[in-house]
View 1 (cartoon, rainbow, N blue to C red):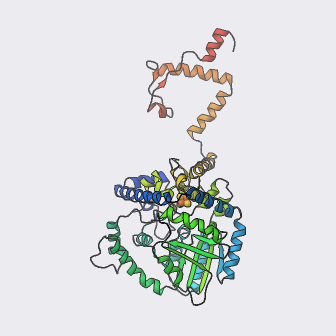
View 2 (spheres, rainbow, N blue to C red; view 1 turned 30 degrees about the vertical axis):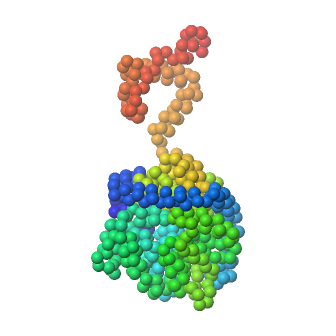
Length: 489
Ligand code: SF4
């Protein structure tokens, strides 16, 4: 059961993640699940160690990281220019470009394209942008069935679950649980299927093969979009992505506007940074690159749907915008002590972990309990910043977003803390009120003190005395002593 279901806020058919409870409530359910914590601890520990070894092989890792940051910052500062260049070159290569302001726009565009292709069934490559906009649910509402073809996404889909990791969406499941899901939900699962990873992968491969060969429409995201030539790039490990972007007659790629890179030279940097940070590989097993359409080779129609969905607003925030540099490697999740204990569902967003804590509240605003709680879902230990291949200062962005959340609440909420500081400010600004307060505190303090210590105070001051004693105020304040001994105030 997902945290969303546990909270009673999930309804079948609703866009994923909407109505999630705040992080503390969702996390409480997750940390109580010892199997989940064991699965996560094992998986993140393994990936962490492998990534560290892969990164240590490159003597110029820090220079690469700085280059990645610089390229992304330059692109974001000139995003309008590079997006228009990308559009121009995609169209020149025979593709079509659609602009979607938000999730509703993007989903309607994709649904229209699928219907125009004359089918009600699509194969899909794992894509964070399509999860963000709730594409699968939107297409299902239009009577269009989506088959996820990435192994982990397929596990999540068959298990009626939600992804919990950017790169390893089924990280919260162990292989015995996966075997059960396959036997229960996959009609063509072989009898006697074991939980051996090879057997599970072979069962999934056989299940997907026919769908690849018969699908008329494939849907993908893209890791990068090259403005210089209008080319799209998908990196992956299983080969399902290549099948999706080459076999169907129509290819629809749904891509966030921040994925654009100016040129091929820039791609070189990211193809070094991404695999080592994500799967701890020197290079990805499959890197698919396509430019428009080519008669007799690959899809006959190509549509690029460029999605804003809150990115322009994030770009306007000088501190928060660095989140748009993210290349979705998931290294920050694997080192985060909070993520390791709660898993991804508690974040109430397709983007879990440290990057989720800074990107979701920017894309969706801080109006919902889940989004307002995310910037606080961190110890600010800084491990995420250290491993990020594009040097996103996540702790800085978290603190910045915490201030935004507090500011948004400030006008609505009269908290005891705020009231106390307000009253204290008035008292400290007036010598007369301060002297009266000191006299009052001295008198009342002596009444409740025992042996010079106050052991229990009424609420809200009991928050202090619940865990420690408070010293009794002195009989005479410094100001009263000064006036008595020096004869002046
Ligand atoms: S924030 Fe950095 S480390 Fe985290 S997923 Fe994005 S690029 Fe990777």
